[in-house]
Length: 349
Ligand SMILES: O=C(O)CCC(=O)C(=O)O
Image 1 (tube, rainbow, N blue to C red):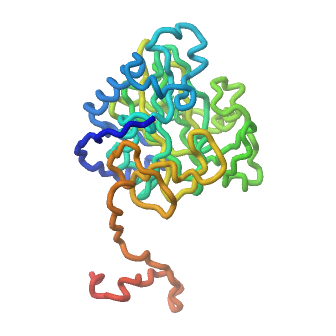
Image 2 (image 1 turned 90 degrees about the vertical axis):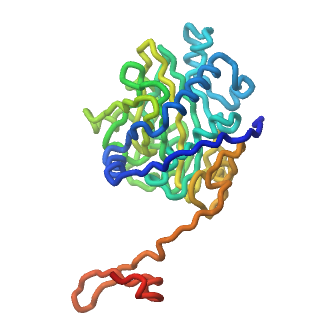
Image 3 (image 1 turned 120 degrees about the vertical axis):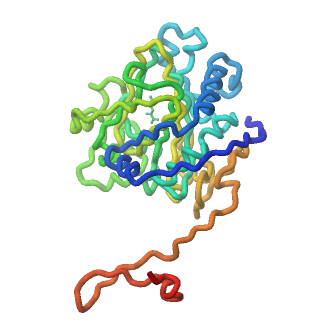
């Protein structure tokens, strides 16, 4: 049960995304934004993680119905030690104010606005603790799990600890962001735009850490030598689109690999996804983080400032130019916009 609290008032300087960053995001399928979240914010998240593993907060909402605790990890050895109890916990933004605040972190939303916006819907939050020895997750595509139409899904992975090859950072298969979503035989019923493709085949066992079983392994092999580790320092944020194949390996170090991950889509995409999947539009259960939308949306339960509870933003820019063919030259030209036709003087020069 969520308990409303006064949201913490913090001022954040707007982060301005560069053209080069947008190109990098599209070119390699992911983008690391260095130092996007301040070390003060990271310290707060780290202290919160310690509270969670010690059972000081969140006990009442860590049940199976809201939190996914890695059963494999718990079953296999050393599971009684409190600091090794949890690997990954889902959707705590519906229960704890701090999770809502990090899901709607203004600097993260600044980047998302540029990459998939301007209208942004916040869908999913996950807290990864990934203690030493914890397993990773095999090749998968996030848009398979969270379908949005049009397909605009994007993850934002905030590093709490340094994430590197030794402690099982996320690895991205560069080039695979252009692949369609491969439906899994276990859940082929969900509808994807890529079902329209002639030769798209159903695969098995996405996310399986066993490469031999994971049906996406042959797709990853098309990009042999192009898997890149998403190395991140505390406060760095890794953005990645919903189609890119990615995976993480076992934490083979003696360090935790903690992170907070949000998943977002353009707020004008239709989705039936919620935590637990049921047919029918689910947009009304997700928070409008930025911009506006013609589709339903939810309010943040703890009142974190975001588009859902703020005045509707002005959007200027007039009407888009239309192209029209010039009969004499045969060339395409931009026709005057409606506002230019109404007030040509305002647009001279
Ligand atoms: O952090 C990880 O190990 C995996 C993250 C991931 O696959 C995701 O957020 O989609």
